[in-house]
Amino acid sequence: MLEAISRYGARIISNTEQTIAACRGRGELIQGPQISEFERAFEKFHGCGRAISASYGRMAFFYLLKAFDFPPGSEIVFPALTFWVVPELAKVSGLKIVFADVDPATYTLDPASLERVITDRTRAVVPTHLYGLSCDMDKILSIAARHRLAVIEDCAHALGATYRGRLVGTLGDASFFSFQTLKPLNTYGGGMALIHDPAIADRVAGFVSAEKWPDEKRVLGRLGSGRWQRRMIRPGVFTYTAFPILWAASWFMARPDVYLWEKIRPLSPLPDSYIERYSNVQAAIGLAGLSRLADWNSATQAHARVMNEALQGLVGVQAPIVPPEQTHAYYQYCVYGPDRDDILRRCIKRGVDVEILHVDVCSQLALFGDAQGKMPGAERAADAFQVPVYESLTDEQVHRVSDVVRDVLVKKQEVSRV
Image 1 (cartoon, rainbow, N blue to C red):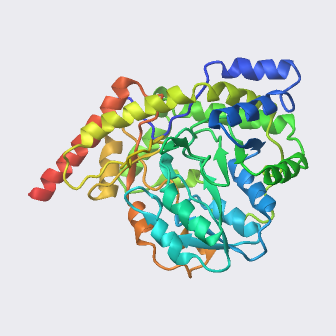
Image 2: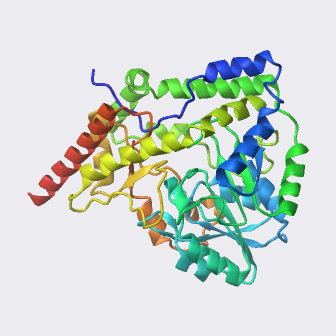
């Protein structure tokens, strides 16, 4: 059977199990010195701000909103294309959610749309560096300054990406990062806030320190779940487990993977797992992973260049655009092509698992009401498909992915000319 390649890859430090065992042996699985060491290393990596860890990236954002203490009912602007949990937590915080459109060429917040939705009640904007590419931050920061808005960067996909020589997360008033298993830095869950105002940082630290510590069962369960995920997406395992289901479903135009997605739902009250602290063992894994981040990102970028070359010259196909003076972390490599769903089926039938929408067109979700208006940029961006270029692919696998995707697209062009 042809080895199948998963759409997802996890970044893993080679001594994960030894790191876990060492923390457990020292009695530092839950509490320990690696938490503050990881936070200080994160600050040093970015060259500014105060880093404060949290149970999730989304909770780092929640604490930031509480610390900024916006008046109840204040408006906060998000790109229409983002992960639903982030605006939902702003709603839980008592804020009114407003969506602005995205630029479909970059998938990121459109500054012109942002300016159009600002009112005298707007207090903040959350530029989402989606799929690993920075927003157009000069324009966004200029708009925010004119309207006296706080800027909270969503860097969940983009750790290590740059905008005009500066790392994402260092450009606004504060930022937050996710360390979920498939993110640029994997600590099997958790997140980080990076804050520039010492008073805001002190308030965030107070909110975090007031939370309970997770119990050992919860932490070991999180690590076990991550271990299971990373094993399931290895080609040798994926080929004989999840892939046959996807392959069979592709013949019937079905999408069984949707059952793995987090259910869209109100988050009030907050789930128990949210309101706890980040564990020491996760911080120890993060500390080791942070030292490898540049190499991981470089490998992913090299794989993206292979894909760029494969797609070059194909009519009606658009590879990711990287504006001048920006770097892309390629959390997802997004492509526009003709008849997306048919492309996906053809790639899957040849052993390459590709994906459609990784986040949500939130302006279309009932969770946020139906008065947001049309978002043509976000709706166009939702029509892209995402090709695996993650760092753990071998050179042979990357070339196989690029060959399959190119061949499928070429055949689609040939059929369209007939």
